[in-house]
Image 1 (cartoon, rainbow, N blue to C red):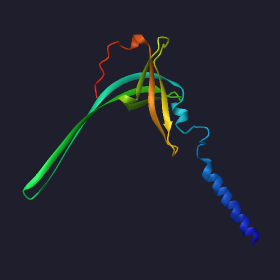
Image 2: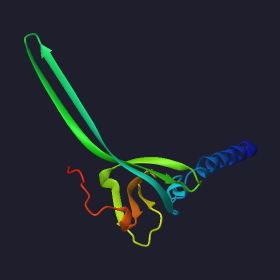
Image 3: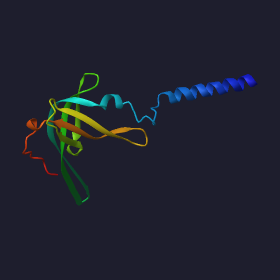
Image 4: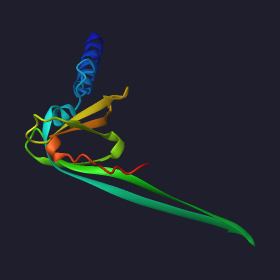
Length: 146
């Protein structure tokens, strides 16, 4: 009887160790995205795009009815950057998550990701910093007003 309890106890400990081995260590503050987004990355191309959307809905009953609709516009920025594994990725973010850092010592444009870790351990990009030289960034920029 003691051997059965000991075997059950050891099995339970092994199961617990295996189940917890894949979880990131919250004390390190690192997740699976840490290796991809950490550091300074070479920025290759930036393209702002305005997405427009609209919807319309209606209903009627016998002789009465109603209709309603809405439209929206959102400006997003798509940019290509080189990851830590030397492959290029395309990322699209809303305009309000983009920060521009004018750096006259910058030879090649770069991107740095800043993210927030939620209590459930999931990561989300808080904002990105695009570093550019002042000669690569025009002085008069027409930003779409929201």
